[in-house]
Image (cartoon, rainbow, N blue to C red):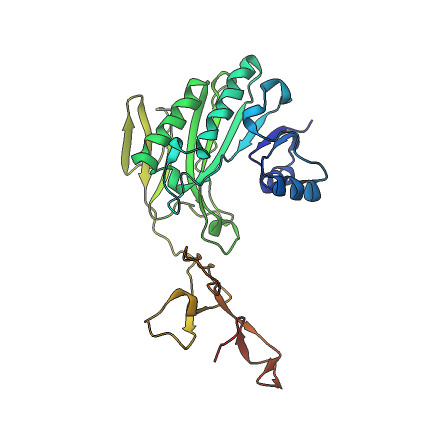
Length: 293
């Protein structure tokens, strides 16, 4: 029998893809954005059953083993206004907690909550503590870890916090910390790994305590990280090295886009070309943006 899961704040269903590849069966989806709902239907063959999570009731959601959710990140993100749980979007996690509470005796065994790293520092860490306490009051032991996609085969520096709750009445199970695909430690140089269970043994350097005991710990691991590799820059700039003129190699991590407005700020990547200056060659290289000298 397949394990089942619910996909809340589903977007276009990327989490569903991963869960289904791991052998789980999706039994319910909720997504508000009308464009993402349409894309979700094209990709997965069905439109999400739920729309506005504020209108969803526990009776609408079938029993499942796992609830996967990543409430909107804008209020946590360091690129936003940093309203945290006081904002209109990231605060929607409270609706998930409402639904779990309504489930009463039929709660999912596992909660998997994913969000941006800025959640940890939002309101000096009090927002994340509120989320941990919310899960704890619902009957879950919680673990969390910051993971980066660059450690799992993707050339992208994308740090996300995964918070896993396990229903206390179902026993005690440990999932985190996990390692990368090559078996190496996934900790970045400064990373958060923690648990609300004071009996958990984690490699600890600096302890973080809350009113209810051990919250987590800071760990540090030194290893050779994948890097962003810049090999040159476009001409035409009077400044030293503005990001919109940089040229990067095809290997290594993809650089982040800046938040300045306007066009022409995409990364420039050096790629192989068959035509250079009208002469066909298999050994020459060109930038993938116009204006490369």
